[in-house]
Amino acid sequence: MRFSRPCWTHAFAISTLILSHLDVAQATWDLNSANSTCTKLVSQLGSALVVQTGPVYMIGVESAWSSFNSIRRPSCIVYPRTSTHVQVAMRAIYRDNVHYAVQSGGHSAMRGWNTVDDGVLIHFRFMKNVSYDAIKDTVTLEPGVRWGEATAALQPFGVTTPGGRLGDIGTGLLLGGGLSYFSPAYGFSADLLKEADVVLVDGRLVTATATNQYSDLFRALKGGANRFGIVTRYEMYAIHTGPPNTTPFYGGLIIYPEAQAEALLNATARYVRDVHDPNAAMLIALTFSNTNGAVVGTHMVTLFYRGTSLPAEVFGDFLRIPNSLNRTSPIDYTQACNLLGPGDDRGHGQLFGASAFSGDVGLYHNAYLQFKNFSTTFKSSLNGTVLAFTPIPESQTAAGRQRGGNAIDAPLRNYAAVQFYNQFVDDLTSVPGPVENGRQLVLSRMPRSPGLPLYINECDSKQNAFSTYGGYDFLKRTYKKYDPTRFNVRFTDGPIGL
Image 1 (cartoon, rainbow, N blue to C red):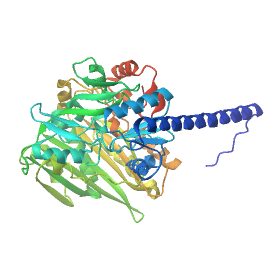
Image 2 (image 1 turned 30 degrees about the vertical axis):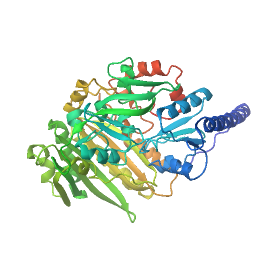
Image 3 (image 1 turned 90 degrees about the vertical axis):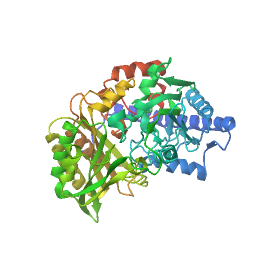
Image 4 (image 1 turned 180 degrees about the vertical axis):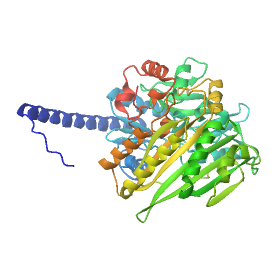
């Protein structure tokens, strides 16, 4: 369909011209301000920590997982080694009203949330320490570590802390809540947070715990994403996984052909509705890939059980479906976290979208139909697509509440977090308009069930995940307390709604 160009009035044309000059002037001022701030930071922190050009600069630029983020160009990148370095950077950013972003693992599919054009990028590439305190039975993480690195470092101690289900994912996962194979028993990953060092927008460093004067900030961090400050240290309660070289868990990967999609959807709906075993965890992923111009469906589940086998009363529906490959066996936790590979496939534009289901199997079938139609219609722009379901049992929410709760404050019932993932072909630097419209149409046609929260780590940047939280009013009050001038919302990209 073609649309004719509107016939603007003379007065409107003049006003538009004036505004365009103002926009250019504002952009120029912002760039000059950011460059000036970067120059100051070089003098304060040194050229080893603050870079504006060269190979180390490009490492930071290109480390974002989605290429839609790695094409952005910050005015400078700050590579802190300590919390003090972050404080110095944040004070300068706050004083000069400069746009900024923070990157830990870089595994974000939300455009702009971990990178910035013409601003300051704080990149945690050199803050990657992991330690275990056997007396306190806690794990301490610096923000630059990725979960594969953390799991490997902790394995000799027979402990772990619940992080991502892919090794490449960074600690930013905690700020969005976090889903792990231990979540049904222990809550969202963030529910095992004991304390956190946080640099606030004005550069102050505070330590937040569940019982000190920053207890409201502590709870807001658990689901508040990047809106409440920059965490420079996480102390987490440890989970014991057994001595090294033992396999106290059972699980693995099962792959199914496209012909079994209906059976998988039926089994998923029943699992989400009926399974209440906190020792069980699953990820169900229906995928389409563009193979030589043909859209090919290959579907898979990862299964995890704290025990010596996969109980038929829990996993039987999935085990009975004819499959193409079944690799299930006794495993350790490190193996569980590698079932789907490291997840480090960079060089492509990658986007997420989220929903949440409870109830009728028709919700799952409708979502699959929308997903399949999208994957077929826009195959020329896509390497592949995924529709994934993570069952979140009532036990997960109850475990989190027992540990003081989080900002998500999900209802006390079984439901599924739904992820809609798109990976684009290599040469795309932005999403074509029709494809973006198609993405938004898919999300609108698989709306969340009433009362359920969206999982913010897997949402689209246009989705107001905060407003779906049971703790939304608390989150807004806490944000106003710690950022009364709304600096974070005005000067860095992140979730909408505050």
